[in-house]
Image 1 (cartoon, rainbow, N blue to C red):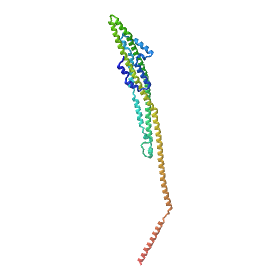
Image 2: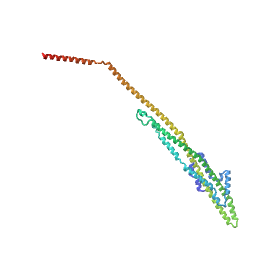
Image 3: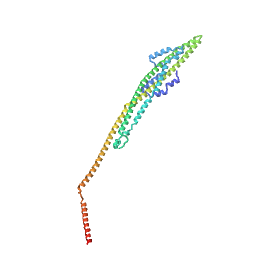
Image 4: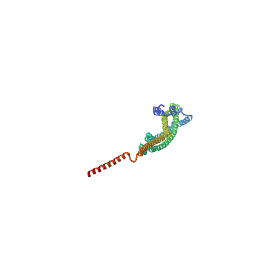
Length: 365
């Protein structure tokens, strides 16, 4: 029986769009489920499943309306409970923890400033040679702190990765369970189809024939009407089971998509833990080593320059002192000029004395 609602479900754009995001094997599984759903249920059953469908068909008693109401109800209840468990899993799947850890990791990595790992030509030993932005001790201490934070986040990410992989194992079981429900519903649908065929091909024709041949056919006519009503209810029941089966078809790609997302996150975490973080640590270690080397060379150059400057100044002082000492050594105790001046002063003094005495004698005469 064609039904526009069922046809719409069978070509649900969301399911098709989700299936496009799966790998080839996963797509093949989903396509097969769709193909099976588009056929009569009896056409896709295995031999054992067909036998079960025949047994279920025999349990459908056309004289009991209750047999239609209860038909497949247990399977539908399980499908409903299963759907709720999948929904709960999706809602409970807190990828925020993983995202938060990755954000923390990124924050710590961004705390690393490459410019801090480039030594200035002036050197870094501030106590000896002036101020610079940051000492090697401070830079090393900062990166040790960053490294410790990254190690904690790495351990947390590792636990979260294991959780994602465990979730995927659980989702594999959910997928298999979903497939089992799909197959079970096919058996129930096939059983209903077989019963409808029996009604159309055997029971209803026989009842109509009896109604035509009976002289008191009021009860027989009512029996025919009851059978027609039973058939309609059974077809509606089969339709409901097809809708339930469609839920299993929709859930299949959804489960796989959740698994794919978990797998991608687990792989990204693996890359961060085993590649990005070790590479970062290695490069920081190399940069710190080069920083120390350059700073040591810069400091050594400053020591050499200071020593050379001191030697130059000392040699100049020694030169000046030596020359001055030699000059002083070559000088006499009394300079010639000093002797001449002293002698001249002495002569002048004697002459002046003699002149004064002569003048005194003349005045006395």
